[in-house]
Amino acid sequence: MAFEEIKEQINHVEEGVRSYVKNSLDIYKLQSFRSMMKGINMATKVLIIGGIASIALLFLSLSAAFWLGTMLGNTAEGFLIVGGFYVLTGIILFMLRSKIEKPLLKKFSKFYFDEL
Image (cartoon, rainbow, N blue to C red; front, side, top):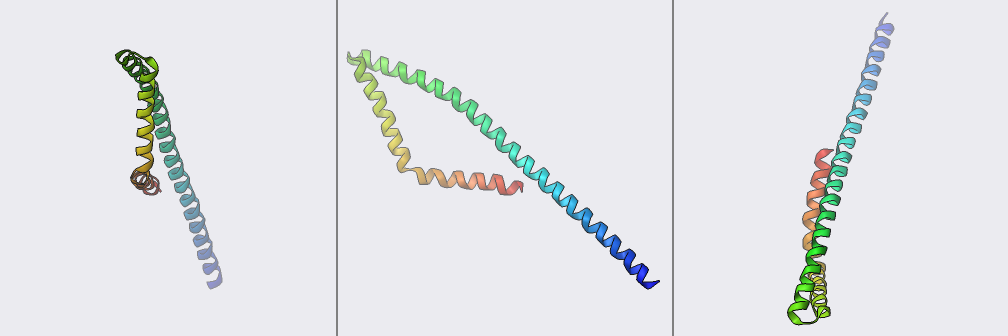
């Protein structure tokens, strides 16, 4: 009689452990899906806004180059000035890359690990 009660209790414990493991896996699946969808949504927004901003920057750069070219009397010089501005901006951003990477790493690690 005592063995049957112990066996029955072990079966209840086993069912509880199986239920716990299944629920834990479901929670981790749901959290990873939520985190993945947030990342996909963020990437989509960045691509759309970045694409529109790139097109706007292209047209602004072309207009600035032509305007500077007419002011200087030579269109090529206008394009050289605008190109030099972008090269200088790129060099400055390259030199400041560690100051840009650290806040981004903190923000994305907080985003990722707080979700899990």
